[in-house]
Length: 266
Image 1 (tube, rainbow, N blue to C red):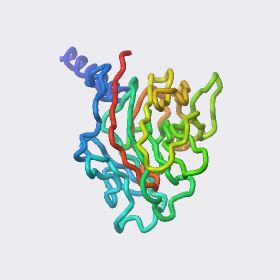
Image 2 (tube, one colour; image 1 turned 90 degrees about the vertical axis):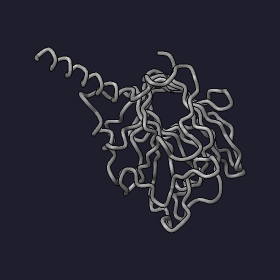
Image 3 (cartoon, rainbow, N blue to C red; image 1 turned 30 degrees about the vertical axis):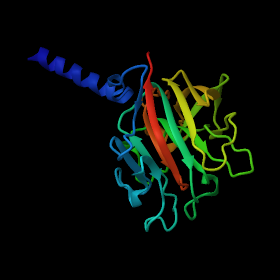
Image 4 (tube, helix red, strand yellow; image 1 turned 180 degrees about the vertical axis):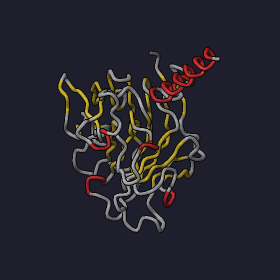
């Protein structure tokens, strides 16, 4: 009996560790692109919108139309944006992969959306479990690959880095500022853009556009100055080796077309 109990405990511990570090990453074929979006509905995805419970998709903020995953603010729910920042979380967590998404900004910003959020969205990686987010939490603790659209005249890079509750290392220096610009060109209008992210656990993360690396950094980690991040620190370990992936709603309509992942060899 003691032996069986010991075996059972070992199995449960291994499952818990697997869930925390890699989710179902081991179930994905390595070296092959796999679609995370079926083009029909939000199967596999769960919204977490600020001030709402996990799973509440207020006003159909996230929806599927004509094969596109759309973020919209029409209808009666969004008379004004009211800082209702949202994130659509994929069901599995990942640590060693390439992620690829096609996106375009469309239409006009939701009334009273913040000025900085015009033609602004993002892909959150190495993110916290949405179940651990507070109801009024604006952004998940994560690494944000910031997606920006041009305004038709000014330089505005995309695939930038923002760090809600996190920090990274660049060129051997711990970076404490919230956002860092990439070296990308500006994409004006409603053109489709393909952004790629290459993630190697806690070692290196690269942002790519048109096959070119536009930003690179290492050692993604929790920021012990941040109240939300403090809740996630265990045994003093700040380093992030993996986590959730989510897509943002930040007050400007955006379409996502292809959403794909390739799990890499260790």
